[in-house]
Image 1 (cartoon, helix red, strand yellow):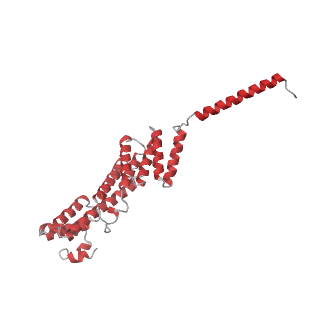
Image 2 (cartoon, helix red, strand yellow; image 1 turned 90 degrees about the horizontal axis):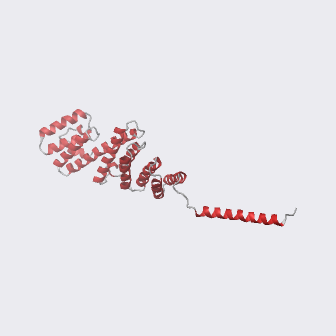
Length: 273
């Protein structure tokens, strides 16, 4: 079937209009910038950051989480990004930055549903698991930084346990608190022993006494009492020595330090190590 000339001209004109409309629409779409702040875009960016954390790519995760925090400001997702950012910084070795971020989170979001986790994570960042203080004193030099970090970890865990005793992180925090106390007590006894071996009996007595005052329930209290008694003996303070001996015998009747008698223990004591 053939079309009339007028009809053909009309179809060609209509086709041109459609083509021009499509071109205009494509040009408009191409020129429109992508909105990276939509909920979907931010959630996708967060998912990618989580994948990076899972794979251990913490530097990439940090960069992505910083963008999420900015684009999702004022939302629960932004709060979660702040916590994940602190975790990623900790795992990448940026301890101070992680602590700063967690301090800021705790200060700005005291009613956050994740505040207990923030306290727990702050404790974990300071908790040294296998270095320095927690290396069981195996010939390592212990620094004051080790001690300060351990005390800060204890305070963070205590804050969590006191404020949120039913938190799912509370039981683990309690275990770590006990571990920290025992290790701090052991450190003080280690220092007291060091002073005693070198004849610094006043310093040894002071350190042993401090361990007993601060960590009296710790297992290291047994040796702290013995060191205190021996230091008083070396200083010629017999009444004080006798008082401490009585406390040692009362609290640790089966003590290894009582095996041969306190006064004659010096030589056999060294063999205990």
